[in-house]
Image (cartoon, rainbow, N blue to C red; front, side, top):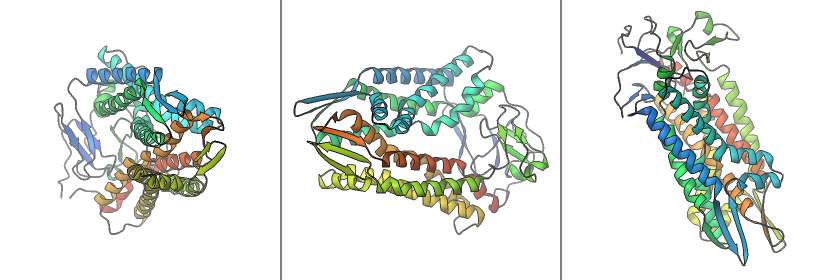
Amino acid sequence: MTTQQPTKWRRLRACSACDMVSAIPVLRPGEHARCPRCGHVLARRHLHPVQRSIALASSALITLLIAIAFPFISMDTNGLDAQIALTQTAVTLVDVHQPLVALIVSGTAFLLPALYLIGVILMQANILRSVPRTYSDVIARLFSRLHPWMMADVFMVAALVSLVKLTEIGEVQLGASFWAYCVFALLLLMTTRSVDIDWLWYRLAGEPSPDTSIHCGINAAAQHATGCTTCGLINTLPAAASTSSPPPHYACSRCGSRLHLRKPNSLEFTWALLITSAVLYIPANAYPMMITTSLGQTHASTIIGGMLELWQHGSEPIAVVIFVASVLVPIIKMLILVLLTCMAQHPGPLSAQQKTRLYRLTELIGRWSMVDVFVVAIMVALIQSGNLMSVLPGPAALAFCAVVITTMLAAMAFDPRLLWDTQGNTHD
């Protein structure tokens, strides 16, 4: 068992996954520090982090502007030519009376990523020029909240799925925007990985001296302390923080974010969101996802129906992608969260490490369910020729968007540290 001695290291961090306090040593570029108990990454370092982030974010923003400015996909169907720009995937949804779906598609595919990239450039430029913090704190607080909702990589997979469907209808050509967006999705991923929140807050606000009463190898909550979910700094809280109901409000001494030993009403919010997503999953599968009109004849297809049609037409790999993303992923995610929520109250046979791995799986796979929604958005934007041929989103599109969002919110509402509270307060 770890010896419970006050640490002399400068940087203390409470793991956001298991709550154990660790001392982070000096890291060289390319190195990262993991929690010794659950393996969660506590900090990472990059060579020339400011210049690296600015270069990647600027490049990503330029490629996004190119992707918006040029044609994305064009198609020729029996003499009927059509082409779309990236933004038309959202604009056309508004035209067919699906403004909420349009907002979700545009927000996750290019608006939120653009906002994130601009924030990275502004904040890192301020650090480079040693400009006072001003609005940099606000931008830094937004980073962790924006990250799960940026889905450029998911949109690219949806575009590839759409290409397979479109080649069955006519001749498809990829515009400059398509290739620019592929590069943008890659650069966006590289940009997010280049931003180390731990190092960022150190440059913005320094590192206050740790409380000498805080011990490594013990849960922070057992020491009346908590790690800030925004900047990572360990803050000591009064004993009343764990006994008052409702808990009083405390703010991080570095970034000003609210502090709690555990997320307030975490299990209640998780249950509520899971029940909501389960209810919404019924109309999302029962109603049509896409309504196709060809030569005056209308055909409505559900998620399962569309998958079966792809399989029958020889597109088995794409059918499997749709089945996994739209059927398996939501069900698996809901079942895992139900299991974890129950085990947070009544520990089962799984170890805390195994339960934490399951929780990480829900964070990893949840956003990929948006593939089918993006496919519908691309098809609707490109195929609009009246009674000759047109595609409209079905009522299931909005319901399925709501399923994806509520399951993601449920994963965010769940506090994984609850899984470790029954395992003891020290690291063996």
